[in-house]
Image (spheres, helix red, strand yellow):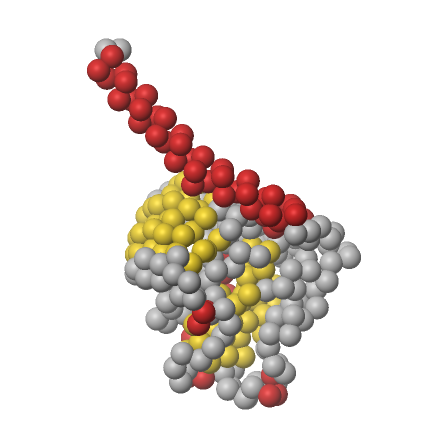
Amino acid sequence: MPADVLLPALRFLLLGLALLVLLFLVPLATHALWWTAKGGRAENWSTADWSSAGLLPPAAAAPGAMVRVYAARVGRWRGIFAHHSWVVIKEAGAPRYTRYDVVGWGTPVRTDAYAPDGRWFGNAPEIVLGLDGEAAARAIPGIRAAVADYPYRSQGSYQAWPGPNSNTFAAHVVARIPDNDVPLPPTALGKDWTPSGRFAERTPSGTGLRLSWRGYVGLTVGWVDGLELNLLGAVAGLDWRRPALKLPGWGRIALIPGGDADKAAPTVAGPERRPAADSVSG
């Protein structure tokens, strides 16, 4: 091969390797060190704390309709890079909350298997999306329909990686929420999984395009979703709507100090909608 062709090709290859290390390997390695140093949860299933984290009031004390999407770090070493996400609803006047998850044993789709705001392997959940009042009431029928028609619900259909898994399910449900403007966190591995033969589709927010090869590699570009590069389920990218980096392991890191202050908890941003944190970095 002529040198004038070989050298540019080598430079391109080296640049690609450097970007791979910088965008994916370095964040994962540093988060692994941080997770270990802070005593990342190592409980097994039988000894972990699955109790309520106290994020929700008693249903009787919240008479209006409510929707919450939660995410919490998964157990043991997997918590370095992954979250489990689920959906909670309550219709106006309902005496209790209803929680929907997908799990990796038995029949995947579960209803009320755990406390609505329960810890996951001892890790407290954080709010990805919160809706109240009329906004929640409008969303609940679509959420119930999405749970009912989730296509990967038969025993044995669950795959922890690259999917379909709990985050594939959450993305399927979130896509049916009207006017949703908060994406799942970048650490929700499986959210970008697509079945064989489907390479391009709208993002769950409806504001962008996602190209994906079965969740192994992909590219997402959208107003709500920002720019995301997916490599083997790990996501690196940018949020340009609320300026932030998206890094494997770490999740979403705001670039403007205090820029996510209104998203650290379900604070009221209007009469019906409660935007919440999509910086779910453990």
